Length: 280
Image (cartoon, rainbow, N blue to C red; front, side, top):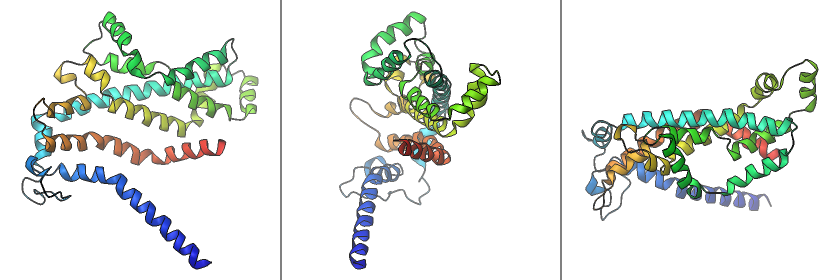
């Protein structure tokens, strides 16, 4: 019996290792190819090892991307847009979630149901009226069309905060009422400080969505110095040719902020996921 369990456990671990290797292979190939010369990326004999490995010009692709294509400017643009969107999402969604969880007003359930329905509408459906709206404001070719829509109440973030606030014990809310704390004071001094895990989780999700967004930058940004990093990556592609080694080097640079953010905040993401699982 013990022998069968050991064989079963070994089989499960072998399967998990195989799935992990298949999952991370595209990432490893991207990192490896970012150190290769353009002619070696798709050579007849595929290899994970770079032909420029441990040579003097090993980092030449990264130097070209950062200096000649001025990628550091695009990274700063993306950081500004993504941080603004993430902070706006946290502020607006936490306030909206608190209102739906703890406040009483007419039509609350209808408004919340309508808000959830918006999760099923893809952004491509609303992008044309949104474009004409931004054009009427005179916001074309600026960061405002990339940032302002994220300050509107996001359905996912509002739902997540509402679910979290509803499980906070009601006596805490009643004690605040007895002490004469107003609605905003109740939110800012009592409830919001308890939301470290969902706040960090929503911040990362909103940051990633804004960082990886391409549709809105392509529509609204035409000036080179205002381009975001995802839009700048398209500069390596043309109708007849693609500089794959530079494109992959730029892709590696573009995901580094996301990896760093995830490494420092993964504890809060796991806590938030476990909390949702226990509740479900």
